[in-house]
Image (cartoon, helix red, strand yellow):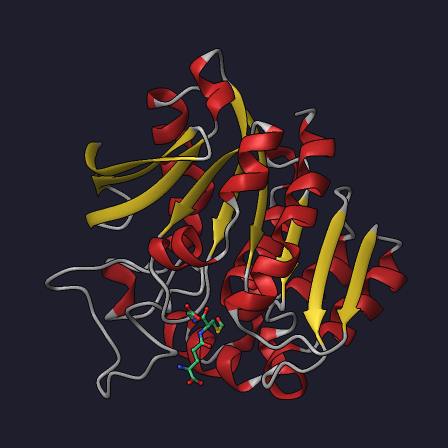
Length: 278
Ligand SMILES: N[C@@H](CCC(=O)N[C@@H](CSC=O)C(=O)NCC(=O)O)C(=O)O
């Protein structure tokens, strides 16, 4: 991987890298925050998955996560939200909720998406293997994300509990088989056979398999997308049915923006630090 950019931040290093991804079949950029403790030895990592329209830079620049990560000794690993570059398919109308910036953390099976859109495997396997071989990381991982990225974080953790110690989300798309964003993306990437969609629906996965990991979810009550797209009540019902350790916090007055994420990211990082032994 090649260094693109680096800034000192809260005594640590905010870094952007580029690499050629075999999983996505294109060149990718991602961001990393290394806390000051990484100068002395290997540290645990929180993976952050961003939402629709984002690159790795939205979270790095807007969430203000570095202060708490530096205090807690946590690395932050921040991938992009889709494959990028010439030859990578995009929505024909340039819609914000399909194609570039909207990979939904799935492995697409349908043309033209299946040439590049394998964000599930990228985040689960290729990116951790790369950063853990090149950076001072101790192999302990937690995962979090926002909206589409909250959906991705929950699905990755629910399907691979041995890979993470904890999972959290901000305003996740909790039940994508039952909302317009999910129908559009899962239909395009996986095809119209809805049986394939269930593997990427956190509420269905939680109901069917339960979850051995602690789960923290924050949801703003003034979020414009709450009723139509996010459906946290489906996740809560699934957790109650399966006995999963979900804490769902409804936050009065907060919307869907990065101001909401910035308000609670330190609490999420402290939650993950407890489970990571940081
Ligand atoms: N442009 C769209 C909404 C786009 C949007 O709100 N994106 C969110 C994530 S939404 C779910 O995945 C986001 O994080 N945007 C980037 C940012 O820096 O705020 C519309 O207008 O409806």
